[in-house]
Structure formats: structure tokens, C-alpha cells
Length: 220
Image 1 (tube, rainbow, N blue to C red):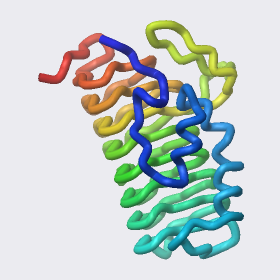
Image 2 (cartoon, rainbow, N blue to C red):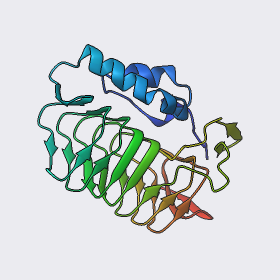
Image 3 (cartoon, rainbow, N blue to C red):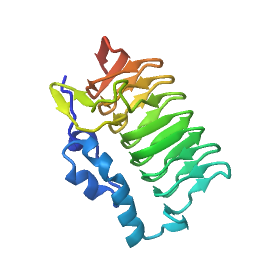
């Protein structure tokens, strides 16, 4: 099973204001240090149909933001996205269209493509989530190693990222069950499903079902 880690292998980015960022990154974690500058540049130039609702916060059409949600700048929230009660967007967050950022979920320095769902009690920090990616209730992206050292991505080979903080990389259509922990630098391939309460690490191939880290089967 091929443990894909390159951006083009994991994502089909059709978000107009993110295409360039994705095209320039050979590996998805290379985008993480560039998120803030990319958002600020987009806010300065504007996006057709998007409105600045507060300094540094740009939102698309038909975005629903509940009164108890908090959005810190800079951030871009894609059209049709719902930001539910108690959600905390801590800045450096950019989403595509029709996403769900759920109750008591916290996001910082991350990218969500179209139709991503982080609907209940999720933490998504220093992460990239692909189209239709879904995180079950209480699943989190752990983004800092206990020893504080730079994150190494463990795939078919080791990738030295040089970054102290990397959370989860979820490819298009990845689905993570309730209560999972994605340890720093976890990469989940396209259309792979992870059973609830699984502690994830390393690179998981696409098209699989993860029953446990030592029990990964090809989806039939």
C-alpha cells in the first residue's frame, strides 16, 4: 500500500483562493508557515462576493455564525459555512465552501477545503483537511510532541519537516471516528476511514479502513 504524502496525491484543491498555495507546496506541511501571510494578502486584495465583517475577518456569502462563536483575525470563512455555538477560531484559519465548524470546536493555523466537517468538540491546529474530510465528535489533531522537538513524518521514509507544530493531514474524503487522537504529523490518505477511539500516528494509505494501527485493511 502506497503511503502518499505529496500534496497533489492527497488533495484536489478547487478553491480559487487556495489553488496557488496548494500548487506551490510539494508536501502539505509546507503550507503551514505560509497560512497567515496568504490570508493577509487575500484580505488586502479582496475576494469577489466576500465581506469584511471585522478587521482581518473575511467571510463569503450565506455564512452562518452563531452569536457565541469567536473568530480571531486573520481568518477567511468560505461561502455557505456554518460556525456553530461556542466555536473558537484562533486566527490563521482559512476554509473553503460549505464547511461545518461545530460547537466547542477550536481551530488555529489550519486549512479546510470544501465541505469539511469538524462538528463537535474537535481541536484542529496546524493541520490541513481535504474536501469532504470529517472528524467525529471529540477527535483531535495533536500538534506538539511531548519533547517539543520538530515533527518527523513517518511514511515509507522519514520526512524531516523542521516544524515544531504539525497536527493532522487529512486527505480528501478521510473520515476519522469519534474520540480519535491524531498524533503530531499523522497523515491519513484519501477515502480512508478510522474507527473510533484510535490513536493515530505516521502515514496511513488511502482507500483503507483503520480498525487499529496494527489492523489496517483495504476497503472493498
